[in-house]
Length: 490
Image 1 (cartoon, rainbow, N blue to C red):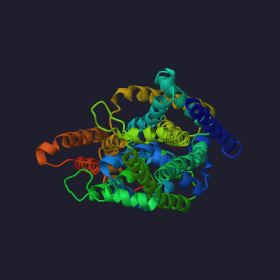
Image 2 (cartoon, one colour):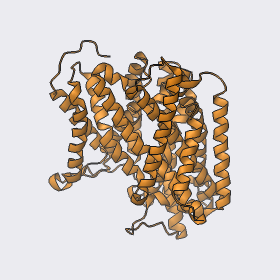
Image 3 (cartoon, rainbow, N blue to C red):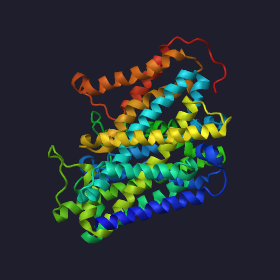
Image 4 (cartoon, rainbow, N blue to C red):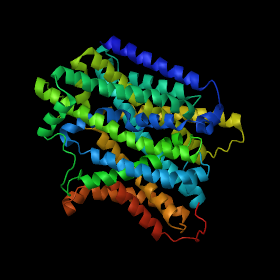
């Protein structure tokens, strides 16, 4: 079985390199292809590929696994995604296209000053380094636990292999390659989830309707948590989904760089709104998968995997059942998780390189050869940092990673939310020198509140900490003494 999985992994990787070769044969070359794909990407291709890029290996494993502990409380957050994408399409995309941006954080320089631009870019880099490294870690973790571990191979070996592959196929084409490889990866991710659901239903001799009725009777398909004090109260989830989308997509260079490769603003808007509706269908599939996994465990007596603390580890439920069910479901799972991992990592690595080159090194396309050489070195450096984070996180993986990743986003994207809201909806300037300190102070205040609010106020913050973080940043910017009034808001 281990050899079969390894061969499937190798075959899929070769398929990715074939797509890379085909996409780089024509059109834009060099830095233009790497950063902007010549702005000729067909919007349906971008929309479909964004599904895999947004879901990642965390959704693939953690959302189904989280159904056991949190039912379908994730669905209101998905509905909030639609509101977030509408905001991106109507407010942010017109701004980015009007200013002809390559790095979206250049807007902060035009609006506030150079320190604000670098602050926004730095918070994106920190957030994406941590968030995407954890997503990649999950893929490496699965390959290690179910393949390499049995051969006595150290954990760092599959980590190095995985990062090296991503580095190689994004090295030349960058975002031009990523747009097309994401379509392949989205396909495999969805096929793997659907095939597993079908395999479980066939094993249990159930239809999808039977599964939903059984799961509903056991309470696992409950969608709305009606306790206002609970972290997953439905209104919190809805608002969190909306603002997580605005920040983690609309204010995120990784996701917006794909959108900005579309030919026109109208194409980019169609791409975003189409993606938002597809996310509802796709996440419903993953929640059904979670219900199917629980039904399988309950009806067959399958022992769910436990952690060191004696609790069920949600991230291990899907792989444990997939590998025990059949060789077919094991292969489907590996292809799905690898596709999800590649999809979330390749675009991130490209976006980090873009942000650093444009916002810190100030690339302007005046010296193509020099900038090409520097861009390649930056790309390699970020790949190495990813590798270090993946290896360092290994001892700390004891819970569902989707909660960890959203916690990281709440603290790191909050200042971006505050900065862009202030820039878009006020005409005031700020003291640019104070912006870095404000962006640090706000997450610190939020961390203290999140840590102690249950004992201080009897209230536990969930993902809405992101909103509070953005609000505090906005208020601190409002309090910072402006140097002048801006009459033309970019």
